[in-house]
Length: 147
Image (cartoon, rainbow, N blue to C red; front, side, top):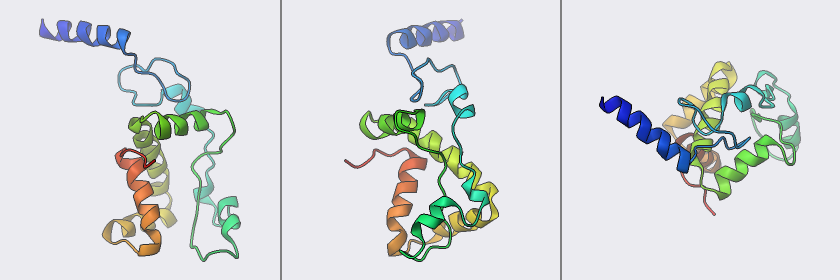
């Protein structure tokens, strides 16, 4: 009996305060957090973590010494990724940051070269990498973005 009342109350609450996808603004179904399944499937993922000399690494050549770099998604002006970042940064949607961090982290942990780096960042923080670590913590833990 209480389960039925709880479902009705949740549906009524969702009617007045809808839980929308940060990318396409469609209603999220139960089990979806921040980003709907359709947007996750159609996300323009780069797969740069599989390449040693990817375009992100090439941007740093001759500027700073790095061992690896990657980008999770391709960015296009006015696209879904831009809308998600806007929601995260300006609308306070930390659930979007958590979901993007989980998706990116899952891909990085599957890549041998990045999995070793992620586990080493957990144990210590080198001063030059602290900005990176703080950014990852913001994305993964869903903390508010500093303004």
